[in-house]
Length: 305
Ligand SMILES: Nc1ncnc2c1ncn2[C@@H]1O[C@H](COP(=O)(O)OP(=O)(O)O)[C@@H](O)[C@H]1O
Ligand SMILES: [Mg+2]
Image (cartoon, rainbow, N blue to C red):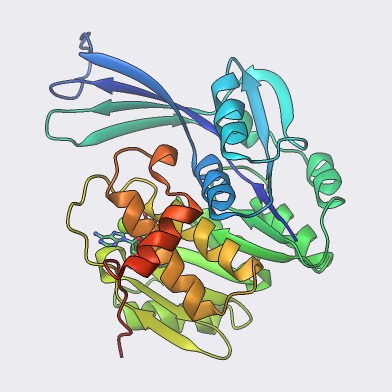
């Protein structure tokens, strides 16, 4: 039982500025740092920290050893990673004095998956595995089709949302995980109830997990409807990777045989810990920290009607 996550890897170049660049302007940045990012990478790391056996599928380009190292350090298996002598996926991020950011993304090797590569990768999958995708690579539709054809369960975190997602075979997913903004775009509705009803009607075989930030999560499948609050956070530091942590912990819990409700509670507590820390992948807690938080009684999740 394992997860094969076919996802993006990005080098994040982060520049601190007092204010964003204006057209035609040249300006010095106050500081610079480079970190490992991409929703795919973050979710592989979340899965591994949660305790899953996870293989990262995807393409790394030149001069981005940092990305493989970050995955390796977290215990993600890299045997199936493809290497190309092309520019890596990357993001140029300006962070201003107000803490706002302005992000330019270049897909690079994240957009260079081939059908042959996907076929070979899926040859390593078994019927009790989970294939995970986000929306930062090419061929997402092909991956869903081919995994479903082989009878392997597929989870999609449809982030970042784009118009193409509506054309993907989402009815073949086992789980669709979206936040409230992505859910609203996909369902064409605003109200949470309408989003949930719309997504379930459109994809009746697919379990929907609609994460609602500080308002918690709403889950519905063919058998159950679960609405949970978020944990009360005493010090909110940085919500980056909240959703990625949620996806990783939810799927690992399911893979380990947890009931959906328990998986949602564990994922909520893990996400709460992540937002109390600065950073993306590095803010994702370890399974042991989540276990302690769950038993401490300080991180509780209420059932909402
Ligand atoms: N302010 C918050 N307080 C407590 N928990 C939060 C908060 N923001 C997010 N979470 C937890 O993280 C989960 C995922 O966050 P969400 O913002 O919905 O995803 P994304 O990061 O994709 O936007 C939520 O379902 C919730 O459990
Ligand atoms: Mg959010």
